[in-house]
Every structure is written in C-alpha cells, then in structure tokens.
Image (cartoon, rainbow, N blue to C red; front, side, top):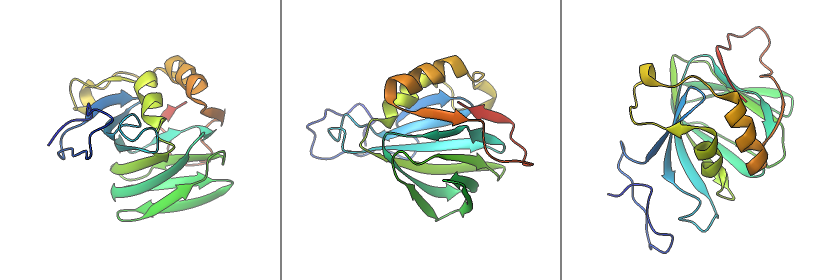
Length: 173
C-alpha cells in the first residue's frame, strides 16, 4: 500500500485504511485518499471524520461533489431542500449549486469525491497538516485561511449554515 504521494503517471493508486495525507480543516480530519494530481485533475477523493455539530457555511463549489456516508449521519441542505444521509447513503451535488452539511451524529465518517479533482488542494490550502489524528489535538478553525483558500480555488461562500434551530457548534467557512 502507498500514501497519497504517488506520481501522476502510476497505473494504479492504493491507500491503506489508516493512511493518506491527513489535514485538519476547521474541526474536521480530512485524509486525502486520491489527489487530483494523481488523476490528472479528473477527480479527487478524501475521507472526512467530523464531530457532531460541525457544519459548512452555505456555499458553491466549482466541481461536482459526491458524499458517501461510511458511519454516522449528515444533514445536507441542497438548493433549499434538506435531506438526511446515513451509513451507506450517497448524494451528489452539481457544481454551482448552493449547499451545506451538518454532522448530526456523535461522529460522522464519509467520503467526498470531487470532479474535476482539485478540491484536495482547497483542503490543503485551507487547513494544516495533521501530525496527530486525535481530535483533542485539532487546531482551532482558521476562517481567514479558509476564505483565502476558497477564493483561490473557486469555492464561494454565500452565508452561514442554513440549519435553523439545530445545534451548530463549529462552522467551516
């Protein structure tokens, strides 16, 4: 098995379950499983682990984004509608469509696939390397850094998380 630093011309890419480039991104642990660089920017794949109450601000992405929940539960707000996603469920959001998510379970672990595959660069530029994967060691959110990375990578924040009456404890963007 290898980590995410695989040359772009490699005919395959394999990453062990506890491997990959780990990044703290506003209270979430993001692990790059396949970088956009490897796929020639065709796609990128990250695993996200996030605690209850973490939400993204309402935003649009320059890529199509697919969420696949491995453990826990997310509440997604997409173009004015809300939908719960539990383990084994998937939702795809077209590029440019306003959306946000909120972790409603104690912890959620999910995959995010982006096409084209440049979103791992947004996480890298908006976060910081995770030398320890323990949430107690997570740095505090850096919203200025996130917004600068968003501007650089075409992510447009439209407003706060749209989850009225729900317990949002951390906001990304």
